[in-house]
Image (cartoon, rainbow, N blue to C red):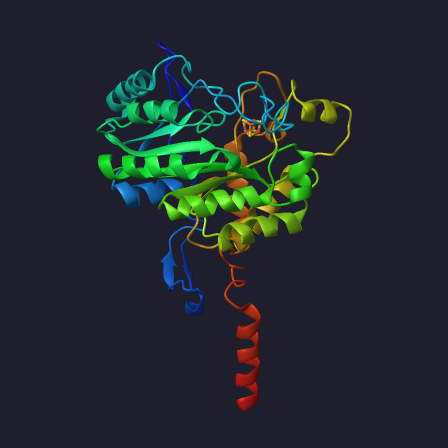
Amino acid sequence: MKVHPKRGALFCTVMDCGAVGKEKIRIDEEQGVMSMERTFRYRVYSQYLKERYEEKVYKIPIQLPVTCPNRDGRMGLGGCIFCGEEGAGFENLSALMPVSEQLQTNIQYIRKKYKASKFIAYFQNFTNTYLPLEKFKAHILQACHEDVVEIAISTRPDCIRDDYLAFLKEIKERHHLNISIELGLQTVNYHTLKKINRGHTLAEFVDAVLRNKKYGFETCVHLILNLPWDDRDDVIEDAKMISALGIEQVKLHSLYIRKDTMMGRMYENKEFEMTSMEEYVERVILFLEYLHPEIVIQRLIGRAPEENTLFCNWNISWWKIKDQIDAWMLERDTYQGRKFDYLNGKALRKLQQLSCSFME
Ligand code: SF4
């Protein structure tokens, strides 16, 4: 995210996860994935966007005056135990500004500064489908700007419903733009989901992903790989579940702890231990190894405001941690999908190999 020096207008450029090395990956064709040449050790989002839209695309964050059913008492109270009052959009323009104005302000600035011509309207903060359908429609229609190639909507799995998706499909066809849905999950471990007070379980997440698919939208899932109650087995299961569901994109975060949260109080009372930075790096690499090689990686580590923060990224710049991930992957000669061999009848493949070796 960057702040306009004078107007305070805000925007974020597409996250560039970086690229390392050059690998050839061969995936068993029985799993339905053809052999391919891989230029990166993981599938980089910025590269994916360039392939899709044939130029650099800029994300414009938009804030709606919405809250979250896990905060207002309908599904839960107090929200996820790590979630602060601002949700995720601490750098956005005011939610009181109409969507068209937020979009126009930032498009004008970015277009001039970067000669940009294609944009993603990103409804980022809190739960952007958690409002009556007619109001939702009115906001989304304002985002259908001629230079917007995609509308990305961040929401919760329990706020995905057919009539909202049907409207988005209509928008997609009428305005010739793509729709992507970002879903918070954080972990597939449903015991941990309970501990962090998500207010939904894995089933609602699976339902939301399948519904998005039915309407032809891509899903991006948010995961925190170092929640205190999760271990490396959970991280592997995260990757396997995301791959098995055919999810298209992933955003990874390390745990960030704010002062004004339940997790902040637990952290100050030493009720859990934070994993080391090295452990986080190991978990990211493990996750990538088990992940389907075609899934796009939007982010390997999150960023957070310094204000009101008790813990963020071990006081190390996010890009240094990303460099460490890249360096270790290169050193170990590993890559996304290296251990992706578990779908479509792994045991039967083994059985086949065994009978072939008997026949020799
Ligand atoms: S679902 Fe998102 S906005 Fe709602 S409480 Fe959890 S982190 Fe915060």
